[in-house]
Image 1 (cartoon, one colour):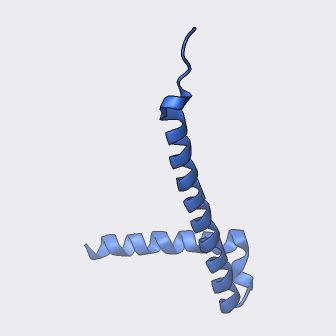
Image 2 (cartoon, one colour; image 1 turned 180 degrees about the horizontal axis):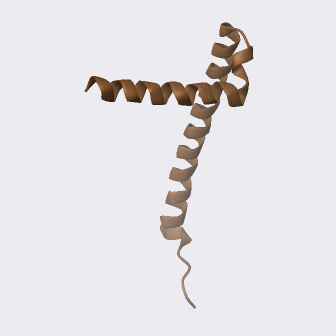
Amino acid sequence: MLSYISSIWQFLNYWYFRYLMVTELYMVEKWERAFFNTVIVVFLSILSYFNLTLLQYTSRLFTSESYNVSET
């Protein structure tokens, strides 16, 4: 069980390291990295909320009675 947790921890560390390399955040100070990560999380949260709201609206739009066109 401990080796399983250790391997998961190594996997997460590897991907965090890749994230730092790709975004070049390894060069900035710790507070700048925290600020950038906060901006990313807020942006993704707003984007997710917008998509959830939009999907609910469009699903109601396409399944409503007003969308059905009568054949004449």
